[in-house]
Length: 490
Image (cartoon, rainbow, N blue to C red; front, side, top):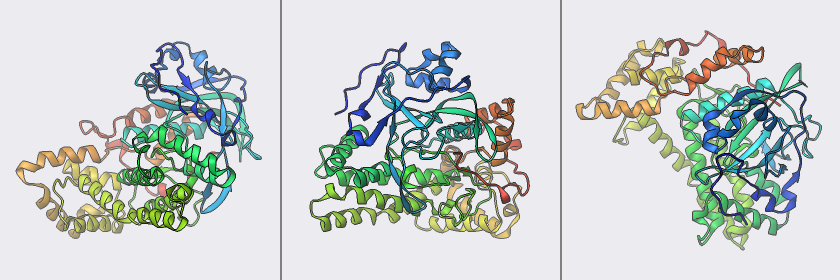
């Protein structure tokens, strides 16, 4: 179904539109709604070069027209994608209510990337929404997605933020903006849920084959491609959540419609980074029961994968009982595989090169001590990496000092110490986008002062730079996170 990739011309768009070759029920053709006075607020020149789009930056007015939706790139076929999803455990019909997929840019390395305008106006899936987005929420996605990228974690990325010159009405009046989002694709678990609930079995088969061919062609000739798809998506999700937890990231709204089949972080709504270590940490204003708390993210990923598996059953086996058995055998491996990967990640954070079974106790004891002393997650591991003492009471605790001696005994061998420190420096960021810094930068940026936002962007682009002094960015205002809330940004 999909066209063969072709080398792109560095001076033109190189669009393909494989998604519109799928059954028509999976999308609706929809042009972005034009805006009054588009102005580029941020343009990611490095990402533009990767996409083969650096030529666009030669004219700022052209950039603003393209990434506000006022001008459609040559070869684009704008659509709104249909999908469904379990939101906080409840199934609902959804779809791109404020986003338009322009098409798929083929970059100079022959890789395919969705280019989507988010906040580009109403679509057939908007329901009662206006299809617009606020400047603040789009700037938040820009800086958070760039941070996750530079932390070395798979993610959708932000190519541009364009102010529309129009107002958006929420609880208060806001400046409007459009975010240009780049992704391997915008296919979600919720897309599969839509197809199995609202389309034919034939459509589901076509769609599943498309996903395999687009993302995982290596399994296309497997004896059971649907089962292999479940396995590979499970592995991708395990790697993703382990990486989130490595850097204290809380997605905040892990509904099935926000779970990417490509294993990328997507939909930066009420996300935030945890500062004080507490597995029950929740910042999202809508997560009243802590469903998506920091420590629950693996459980929810497992739950979401079970939903995904249910959509693949017709192609795992013609015999429903056999299909369920095979799916369950795969899903039942999740807890052990996640635990193994999580501990391996923690061993790397502690510079343990050749872990042994007893090292699990070392990890568990440290986290329990951090929880007891309300220690800063990022600063604790940074201090261990730098062989320094943090300001947290943890570092004056006799129990922690006992733990530290045990840890040093595991890592201080002469031939291993240098390797251990180098490993720790690749796993433990010195800086993350602290909540107070993000909020202050956003507040100033929407007023027209981007200096703090620019400084934060520069800071999070080098999170593992152990040659620099970032003390000013590692100190949290007392009590700031106690009442901090994040929002979906709709």
